[in-house]
Image (cartoon, rainbow, N blue to C red; front, side, top):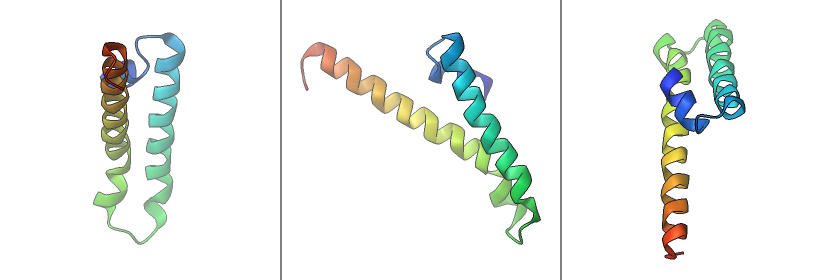
Length: 73
């Protein structure tokens, strides 16, 4: 998750902090939701699912910026 936060933050301290903050919120949410009667596997999946979704969005935006720079959009 640390490598994901660094990539999502584009290597900048503030961007990495914000990505880490989002991942921390997802982790705290999974800890808080354990009192519900949902299967524990689904609740423990929340931080990792957040990471995967963040990386997908990051890859899509990076691809869009590269295409825009080449003049395709």
